[in-house]
Length: 385
Image 1: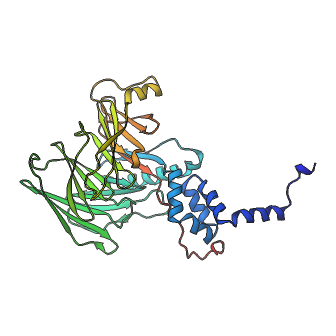
Image 2: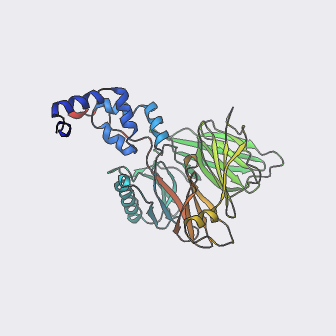
Image 3: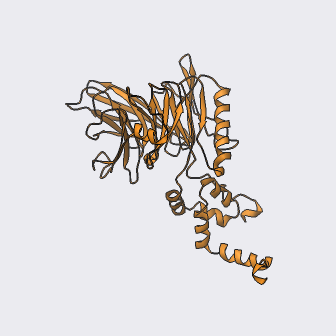
């Protein structure tokens, strides 16, 4: 019957041309691709497709609908052997996950005694040293054929951080010192010309704050690092200015927490007390140094979440430790040292996955790179004309 006949090829081509010739329709189609690496493939079709796929406003809409996925995590001990642990993925991400696993594990096997200093946006900042000499390099396992980038030589680095896009430019090294109530930070930022001019921030810790004793240093969030102290306060350092400020914590929170970015320069805080997990939101306003206060947005018991998963729940004793948290508080990794378990928790849905691990290992989540890295606009391929 006529209704069963296929449309002639010229008519079909004309229909496709009419649809794809509309910029509005093309953007709607690209918006539904679902995965950032599909955008890169689409951008290879033509310069017009590349311009739409790489447009900043379009990318903001795409990320709102399709946040970057967590592919897996690197687990291991400092200056020892790490391994990439993949997370279950849809078929569309299987090849990308295998690439991350192969690249990471090959790099870890090729050079022993490495230490992952930080992982950000699909980039790994590595330290390798002996006899007081240290070398720092940047590993990007998701970029096929990408060589390991070695950072310029520098005197002993006390702290080193990746920028939020994970690239080389903007890597920051910080050296802290303290005398009495005075705390001083010396900051250098890496650019294409090498380590930039050193800048200094100074603060005097006023009573009732005693002298600085750092418990841990949290990775940069919105260009600020946070020093968690043994005395119940957290000291923030704005790396761009630079200047110090005191970040007040939610009531009852003193330790066992990590921070992640929220929209409009805000902060999320994920805290664990025994087996109770709480998620707080801090809307940074004004000068960004702590105005706005904390709002509790979620609280649940990890043991109850595990009970919904299967029959195994962590036993009483010790509680869980927060070891890694994703941007926008999308997920958290928790360590239960008493059982040697690592929990991956998607905080919106409170879905839990459990992994057997050794006590005290470091966890570094490997995310898809955002924004996608598109081909250069002056590529001389016929399809890009």
